[in-house]
Structures are given as structure tokens and as C-alpha cells.
Image 1: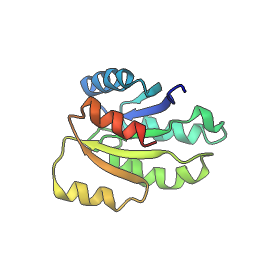
Image 2: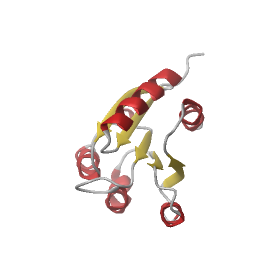
Image 3: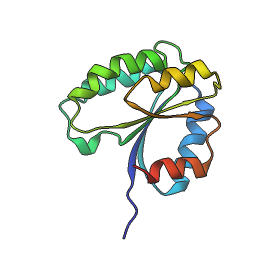
Length: 134
């Protein structure tokens, strides 16, 4: 039985994280298409534009950074709360941050949309486990 290839959305302003996350996700064999956005505004615009799109073109999972220019992760989540209701399928959201601040972790749990808070760096086993649970 072939392994499911999940569509992934990376929202992070760090080029190095984007590159390594992409390589690690590809190495799990569980990631198909990977879309990258460098701030929350780019990503929210994509989701607003995709509202009339087929479910199979949307990502299955979002890995969201907190600290980004233009629109940070919290601002993205605030806008995404209304946008996600119009999307034709649910999308799993993980906050991925280098912050180990309890306030950030607590804040992420206030969003029903957020499945978990993952501290960077994220290793292959963690990505594999998260992707396997989709």
C-alpha cells in the first residue's frame, strides 16, 4: 500500500529553516507538494484566494512560525480563524518556533485551530510522527 503524500504549507521568514524543513519533510517520504510563504500575509492571501478551490489542492498541514515581519504567526491565526471556515477541508496547524517562552506556548493553546506547539529545530523523527498522524 503506497504511503500518503501530504500537501504541506511552510510559513516562516527564515530561508535556512524553509530549506532544511523542506529537505527533511521530503526525506520522510510523507510530504508531496510543499508550499512556502515568508510571512503570514502571503499565506493568508493565498488562503483567501483559494476559497473556491478544490479540497485536494489545499495543504493538509501548516507549519507556522510566530516571529515574522509583515504579519506574524499570531496575526495570521487571527485572520485564519475566519478564513478557515470557508475552506473546503480542515487543515492541521502546528506552531513551530524557536521560542521556549511559556507565554507563547500558552497562547498557542488558546487557538482551537492549533494542534500543537513545536520547538525548533525540528528533527526528521518529529516531522515523520506529525505527518504520520495526519
